[in-house]
Amino acid sequence: MEPVNTASAEKNGKKVVWKRRIAKWSRWLHIYVSMFSFAVVFFFAVTGLTLNHATKFGDQVHTVNGKGKLNVKWVNPTDTSKIAKLEIVEYLRNTQHLNGALSDFRIDDAQCDVSFKGPGYAADIFITRQTGEYEIAQTSAGWVGVLNDLHKGRDTGSTWSLVIDISAVLMTLVSLTGMILIFYLKRKRLSGLILAAMGLLLAYLIYIIWVK
Image (cartoon, rainbow, N blue to C red):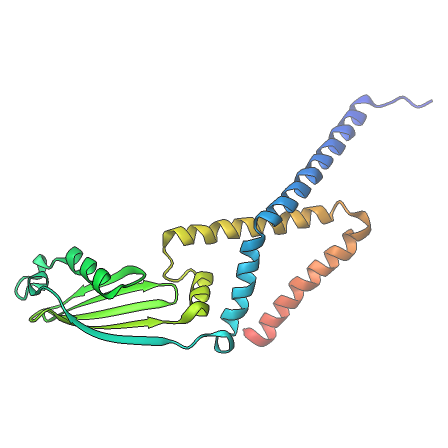
């Protein structure tokens, strides 16, 4: 009768325990992170299509022009350092019902140019400093334009940028845990890895042949 190697058996036992724990936590993360991030994955999948086929899904761009006049003292015809930026911005927001965030406020000797931008939206105001008169052009790209800008993170602010980062982390977790789980499915391990490799190779070949 051969002697039992206690140290080796204990080592193998610990190895089996760790494998089971990794499989358990990978399965748990894959299931619940997938369900939690379902809406995010669905959103970016659909908007990927609308963005890639913007001419088919895109709404018509609507532009509305207007004119007005604000307090000439705010744009101070003589001293650029005394221009009342806050008052001008708040006045334009309230009177023109502007959307989006202030993206630019440019000043030169004759004119002030103010821009507001948001997802699928832009407003540009050109103010004559001598008279306080201004012209405004508001552009709206429709709901598809809004979705496309949300997908790209363009003119969406820091909060939505954080949402995109979190979404990327969640989708990375789903992908990694799915890859880990395939190693615990003996019957499907080889075919799963082959399919993953084929998908990666196909993407690379498409890039090399038709994109690069």
